Length: 510
Image (tube, rainbow, N blue to C red; front, top):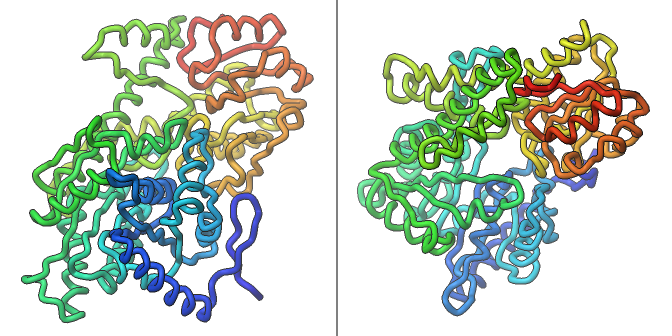
């Protein structure tokens, strides 16, 4: 039986055979020779996920002063049933990610189809052909107990295997730029030793040819400014030695808009890695703080969002106060404090823990349960309650469901035997909750709903008129606003139609 990889839209692509791989190796050598003859440097991007695929396109889109591409990019994705589909999709000039940013499909069309200097492959030997490897392997934190992030750890097995693959193939003059968010200490204590070990096995003198390893973390926001968040944004970087630092600076300067967003060089890769995990720990803690105050506000009849707006007028010190919501999702805030906390003991053999950061993760991970509390204020139990969830991604106007708080919400509602239906215009398939179908027919999924949860602020949901929604429901549902998506005028319209309304931090609703 033919093994296939299925794309989110249902298209099936056969996994490559040994014969396919042999032909691919020949083609990769041919393409690389042709591109070098044009004076271009060769880059491989390892991992074509939400960051890697767009980063690869941004690198391919970089031009010199005459408008000519500086780099040719081989994007590499493992030939697994789960992910191989990205290779043929990208090579057709299509984007493998869903986004509201119009520049995403444009940059894939431009680099893959028009310039023809970006191509995807699943063949490992590609790493022996390149000058630079950008590592975008997914590296996650495991939290074995819900609401107990202090027990979390980082399983770096797959990451180590990915780095070991590089060590088996790359030229010793090739720079390995780790863009993945990693625990502090990873480049010095994991990446560099593995490359040294593999170089030595190949007979490469690591004293004369030490591995070239750099770290520069991304700050990707896969929303309406997806591409800009990679290209037009500040970058922090460092390397394990001076040559790594110099090569990294040159590469980033070629690819990114460093004139408007200058690079920041730190003293070591430890510092760069710590910078990313601390940055996201700060944001996670900021959000966790607002939930505590939101609960307080609800109990005393206060709208926390109006209070927040008042506080944020104090520019320079308080204007970055974040907001409470359904919960915290995405690939960074949910795990980065755990990565750093784990690294203290596992990589540096230090006692203690990052108490404030870890507590913030616990608050944020359990935040979706507060939305269930709001429902239970109107219904004593949720068993058999017909609930429609609007939005399953973790961010408005994107299709990224990684660590979405909607997953926690649905899981706990289903444990209480609620009848939950989910809708999202950007999500084709909910990988993390496969048993739940993400519907596209909004009127059908709203019909008969007793509770409607505005979970994610997709534009489609914000533009629904209250009467339109109530007509689709054919009921007078309880409306739950999870993140100030509905203003007071809209709330009053719902109330005028006979609906009750509740909201996170909205104590002023009576």
